[in-house]
Image (tube, rainbow, N blue to C red; front, side, top):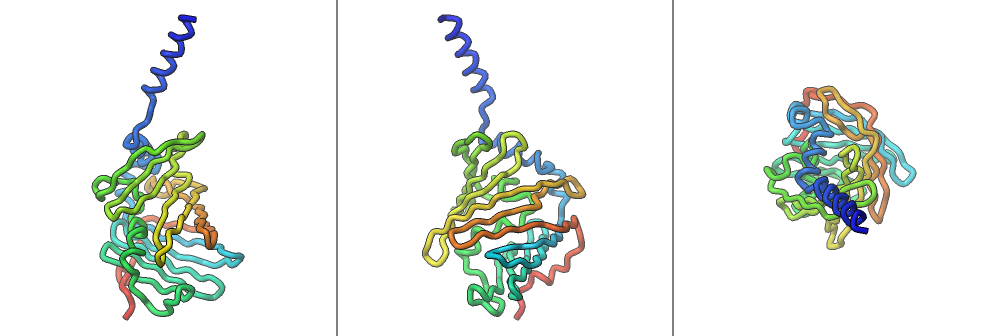
Amino acid sequence: MKKSFILLAVVLACTNLHAQTADEIVAKHVTAIGGKTAVDATKSLYIESSIEVMGNEGPSTTWIVNGKAAKSESEIGGTKIVQCITDKGGWMINPFAGSTTPTAIPDEQLKPLKGQINVGGPLYNYAAKGSKVELSGKDSADYKVKLTNADGIIVTFFINMKTWLIDKAISTNTVQGQDIETTVTFSDYRKLDGGLVLNFGQQVSTPMYTLNITHKKVEVNKDIDPTIFDMPK
């Protein structure tokens, strides 16, 4: 019996030694996506994708200038949707939301979108962005790391215990006075030129719809005309 207790104590001690903190998990995640060198070397991304929602499929193009701006143009059922986020604000054209001409994105809607301009994601260099992280639990496959950014937006990232890549992210945002939970599931990670690791598959699930995004082509450090991010007058 005494040997059993000793063995149990040793096992528990080893478990505690290998316990992960939120900072350690985030650091391993950053290494998994290529590390600081790969992220900082990625000045821009040009992405061609296909999107599918409610049985309709169409093309989508995204331009990202790291830390500066991100713009996407998508077409669903013959209707064009444009969303542009910059480090200074954002605008959109979305006929499905009643915006048939370029319209400034309200501040409350803009807050959860700001992270799109960073190719390393919200967890990369999070402290310098004014964000905080904490370990909120784990399941059989993932650590759950809760990030609270400088605007008070909370996102829970499910980081795989083996790959250290993000399996999914869950956030709750307020839209027209209602709290909407959004779950984004990531898949098909691939290493790009320069070493950055990027997911080529995303599924965005909300109570209203499920959107599937599949990247078809990704170019790193392609020249991007900065005027494409200007809001048309």
